[in-house]
Amino acid sequence: MKFIVPGYYKNFSCIASSCRHSCCIGWEIDIDADTYSYYGTIDGELGDRLKKNIAVSGGQPHFILDENERCPFLNENGLCDIIIQCGEESLCDICADHPRFRNFFSDRTEIGLGLCCEAAAELIINCDEPFKLEILDDDGFDDETDEDEKEILELRNFALEVASDSKHSFEDRVNRLCKIFDIESDDTSPAVWADRLSSLERLEPEWDNCLAFIGSRTELEGSLINEKAAGNLLCYFIYRHLSAACDREDMRSRAAFAVLSCRVIFTLSLFISTEEAARMYSCEIEYSDENLNEVLNLLCD
Ligand code: SF4
Image 1: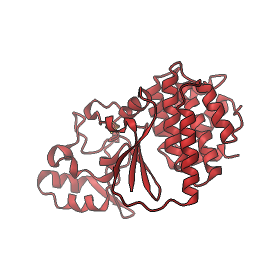
Image 2 (image 1 turned 30 degrees about the horizontal axis):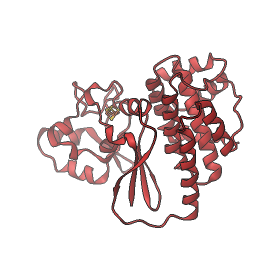
Image 3 (image 1 turned 135 degrees about the vertical axis):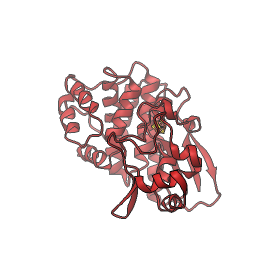
């Protein structure tokens, strides 16, 4: 099994106490079974805190967030008390893994960093290197990929080639992608997109201001002044979402989603920084399965 990552992956590190939008605030954090058993063996003051601050709902243990939606182990210095007292290896799978995502194939696991993390967004958007995939690890045991997987990977790789081809303008790259996936140009007005997005589940109240800004525009922006950053975002959405497609039709919706996501972020970049626009969009849309599916459904006609 090969473990594949984008070139920038190895440069990621959590900025912990400097993070303005810590993933330890506002997210429900489930604890995997092994870590839950381990936490049950910890004695002393930390053991007591763990017992008091973990609840089990529907058989799933999770941390009980405080009244400000903070993880009870996130201290006033923005650091994790569990890491401080027991080391990073004592974190539950979700905390240790965030902000990574994975897409699984028979011969490979593709890993990436999610835009919902501000450190990852900064790294992904401002990466100077052309987008490329690398083998992070290979245990030598590959299952054979079936025809469907091969087709998805080949088409995804071709889409990545087009999206990262800096010899062409960003607009040309998008037009080529739309041709490849038979995507018609979207003449839905920003006001309609703002309405649609505002009917979805939301995480941060500031998202309302962003949607109001989108709704006030006459059209969604087609690119950024910094075309390198625009291309980086397009490659991110293609790498993450086309790889998760189940068939060619699903790839088409996901390619349309990649283009729409870029255009929403570019438009928001006129209101807030590109990195913050990407982070917020990712939190609100990509990191809610329900919202993501809703937008994909809107794009599949
Ligand atoms: S959001 Fe990213 S940078 Fe911030 S605390 Fe979480 S992993 Fe670290």
